[in-house]
Length: 119
Image: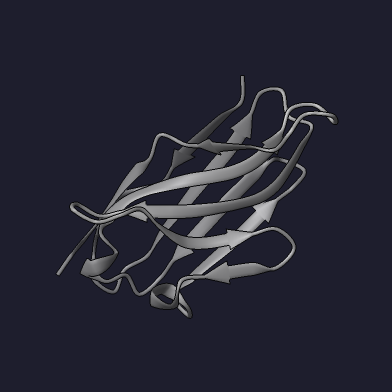
């Protein structure tokens, strides 16, 4: 059973910083893309940042957020700087995982962590 466990959310004032971390555990053969999504109340879940070899960012976070990955530890992190009230959302870790060399890629999600930015 593969699990993604997030940590690092919380309450911060506008202009502040937070760092989110996510660790994948369980029977893992390989991980392809890892990333972060967010969902604000009443809105659809959206991609914030993703990383495989290269990284990609939503336009709204470019220059403020940085995604990083440690392949040896199966972890991914999101450094969020210059936070804005509109960044308030539940942030979800996401990964494409193979549990065996012959298995298909499976998409896994973490449980989500709340990020609240006050003005």
